Amino acid sequence: MKTALITGGSRGLGRALARELARDGWNLVLDARDAAALDEAARDIGPVTAVAGDVTDAAHRAALASAVSGGLDLLVNNAGTLGTTPLPRLADQPVQELADMFATNVLAPLALIQAVLPSLRARGGAILNISSDAAVEGYETWGGYGSSKAALEQLSRVLAAEEPRLAVWWADPGEMATDMLRAAGEDADAAPPPAEAAAALHRLISERRPSGRYRADELAAR
Picture (cartoon, rainbow, N blue to C red):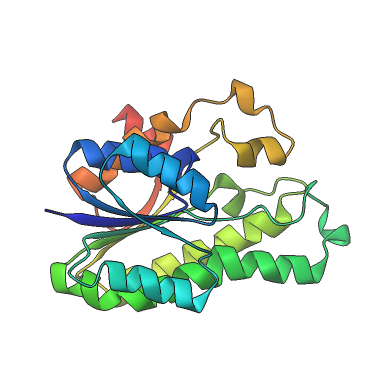
């Protein structure tokens, strides 16, 4: 049985992707900061190991690594934060809040990768880092969030070169009807449900595409 660790698994894309993998019989370990929401997601998805906590906390990351010490086939770094809201222009971006966002969106994923690399290497596993089109486009007020995702993409690109036995993907799921998009001031109700992006990423995982950057809409169209 394959095992996947998905951060931010209580709602949105993380929950939708967990549901996709559960249908294939994957053993799932899910993480989220909100313990109640995580427990509700676990009941909805089926038998999973739920480990509540914040990915920026070293003790929590150690608990996640312990939960998959028997072997790990897939790590999905999905947990993230928008940072300052309403989204500010860079001229008004509080630098400490930007540092806090980088801690969640860049440093925590790298630290978790480091913690579970032995388990991934043992099975020739895969890493899926969730990115955004804001990482590569110059959208006004998205500079802080976009720069954190651009940093995550560069880490992914280098990791793919350094770990050729692993599949390392960094993927842009596109706009989704999520609380995060709503918090950014966008029309979340007009966006497609996370299940659509999750189905596209499921295809990426099941087909084990080569390491690289992918967009959910392109995966769905193939």
